[in-house]
Length: 317
Ligand SMILES: Cc1ncc(COP(=O)(O)O)c(C=O)c1O
Image (cartoon, rainbow, N blue to C red; front, top):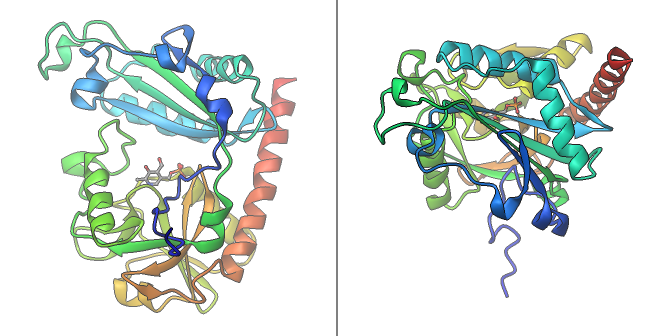
């Protein structure tokens, strides 16, 4: 038996084991089917080319937190790649609600909504061959972020793979193809870390392979300019919360030099909200655990989610 608490590897998406997920129902193009039977065609644009967009959303007390913001990003991304969702945000919410209800979920659940260009007539790239689409799938799982990850933090390694320029593949696309990020994650894993800290094309600290990245230096919160990373919903909420609560926050260029010397570092994403970073390239960050500024932001974020859920409930009446 190993004594290294990190031996199994930690990721920001580690969840507590929940056996109920063995028998969940998954939404596939209008039907709710057992996960063992939830399938798409091998001709699907998403399977064949990674040609699709997705959103990760969390269910709190019967509502999808920051649903409008997630729909803004999804619809904007799909418009940018001429992918017709064929549904309104209200209809998408009905799909998610129906899937959650079928699984008896009202909270502690995480959704991966996937929209691809659909089934192709031939196994080639041209989008015109995607004759039958879109394909819409919603996986909603029982999910509680791992307390162990919150306690121990994530170990990052800086990697050669960058999240790059908008004229190659815009880093704002939450595209099905995550190969760029998967390569980064492999590089981090091979360096003995949990996840990758990706730089931008100029060498400034940018993002991780799956979350946005923040540091805290002398009470100031810093994150990248936003030009080369995912326009994370949680990232924006953290920036807004800092601004509204007198915490100095800056979107700016900074290098690994400042990241290594930070008092705190943390990641943001819908799944884990805010997750502490224990180390970068083997250098401990601060105390190697969640710091006071992150903990304050985490508390503010929890309150914001509660307010957003209440607002959504009121809007439904
Ligand atoms: C590369 C990357 N960065 C950041 C995020 C976090 O975004 P959000 O806060 O909207 O969940 C994600 C999540 O999809 C992501 O894939």
